[in-house]
Length: 301
Length: 277
Image 1 (cartoon, rainbow over the protein chains, first blue to last red):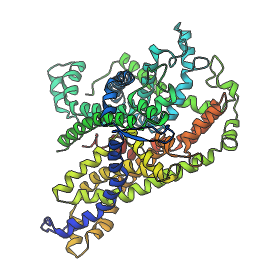
Image 2 (tube, each protein chain N blue to C red):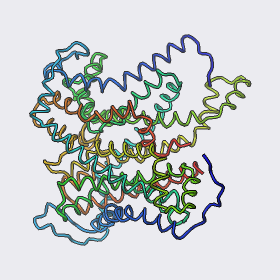
Image 3 (tube, each protein chain N blue to C red):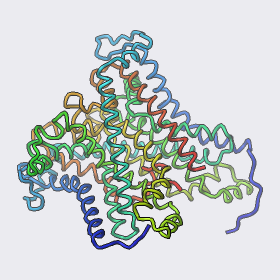
């Protein structure tokens, strides 16, 4: 194929206008379907607005919803549950994901087949994942309490039914679904590693454990950062798994912030308060997203 | 990294691989076998792993009583609609971001990345109220539009990175020959980015197909999608696990096809730039 040597066109008015034309439909769509609702949400959060009131009056109350959020004991509890869930899932998934990547890194046909089967969990509807695990955890007929009993561990009301075990049980469901994603990210990271440092280390008589700790881990630092931020953002948004397994219970043990907001808005229809809580969550995730974007940019530069 | 393994290490590593396969596959195996078991057999203690009485009753019930076909149709309508709309809006925009030399346009592309990260519930609450005011609650459009807000943002970002990798020279040659920028996009760049379009389409489809929260709040009994159908069948009967499993089998078909046969494209979508380079 002939590629003629031509000067690269400079910033041309015609070109930029065409590009604007290609962007316009999306910009209009997003302004109407995403930006407007977010502004609308900020507006609503300044009102007392319950859909359950007979005449659904809106009363302007300024920032009272936000002040209420920061002193609401239920919000504090759900914030604690959220942190527990996010830290629990993200750290477990990163450690196991790296382990899986190291275990299955070989490019043999068998490993490729195993890896593609491991992708199935993260493509499944989370609601189905939650329901399947709920049946596995069931105190009366679930296989997990049955085998626990054989090992001499009494499961009581089942792992999901006890306050002490509900959170770890829910975390395990998330770990099951999303560890393969971390495996994929770490596999890409491992494949991009240079080979020279390992050869040098071997010449120097380093053990495999030493080259893992002193070469692999430091070189994977950017991958860790990406994985950490990506999964943290996703983990903050968990909903389907909680809905399917515990509905936030027992008590409020697994009522993470995202689930709590849903309850306030879509079950109690306290829209103003729900909007203010949602905006607080949005702010937290926005900070993480901006960090994520900055890291991605630096890495691709 | 490759060093000679000792025999006991090999056994240990193989054992770990088997453990991993068991952990990740048992829940799926359990779902599949439950869908072929009679209600009473599904939950006998000790559990029957391999030898159980095989039945298609759950599937017959799912189709005839729970009307799973209706839910599948709704899921298909919503997923296809959202995917089509997202591609139509997102592909040209991704191209514009990749080719424009204007700093303003380039920095605004990050806005779509941020939009993608918005917690769904933060968008859902105002969107629910707006759809309610417009009397659009319960229509296919309500879900399609909200799905598209997220999907299209994804497509822009994905396609931008694809078009950046498509060499400019051919487009520039076409421009010199008098083609418009739209021609350069449709006739030169688009055919070269088919893999990116497939990856984007798969991601959009599976996002809408698996979505539960948006459909939960925005659909009516007539427009319910398959995850809501599963939930409904489950609460209607006391021991609905068998039927739940049979209905879930319909819900997981796209996931299994994508993971096993289209994984190359799917992984690109899920890791979302994280593994690039």
